[in-house]
Length: 274
Image (tube, rainbow, N blue to C red; front, side, top):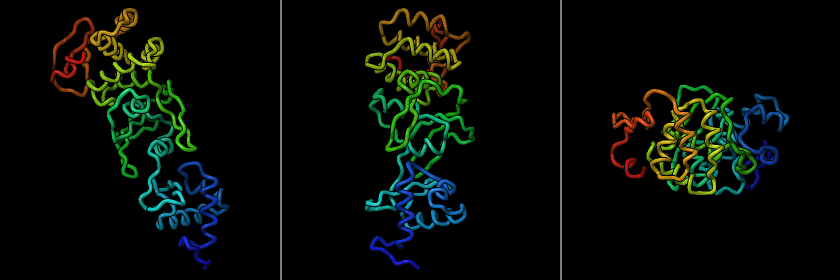
């Protein structure tokens, strides 16, 4: 047996642990660790389990670990940044919806769950990792456009840019917390530095759901935003047939014929805001 150090871990093992700290920049697997530590995969797997059981590593999920800061006062309670977790667990993916809205200051509301748009097909729409709830939206990777890289520590994470965030929450209002909150985000978008009508129309056309133009044109018009050319373009691009303003709401609501839209949120919130 090696000689335990004052930190409660044998010197040889501590040397390997320090190497993991130096040579990893985010979550890693036993295969990755085996290359760094010059161990075979089986040895690396046992070693990582050993370190995790003693709080020196954080086990994100089966087979995936991250280092714990050596100065952490309570290593067993340390958790990896949820955005970094998402970037590794759900890749290829990007942070979107209300989570991206918070990042770009399109909303002041704080959501505990993280919205992740992923190209990984999964039956689950929600999953919990290290106490954080991730809400998953499947989208073919070919439609993962309009994203920007942001650095979280030493890990690059993709997040939808402001215009793509708006298109996503109009395509699926659940990603924005429902149409009432989507309306608030849209108002902030058009009143601030992120406003880009050309980009918004381009993204809306590429998403492949022309109901987005209905919701977008209707809400911009009702918010009394001065953008006549933009509204006219939305009107020309809208789909035929009747669309629900918020597909998650069961109420029937009134029909706005100009936009072929059923305004089915009738508790007064949307009507007053728009």
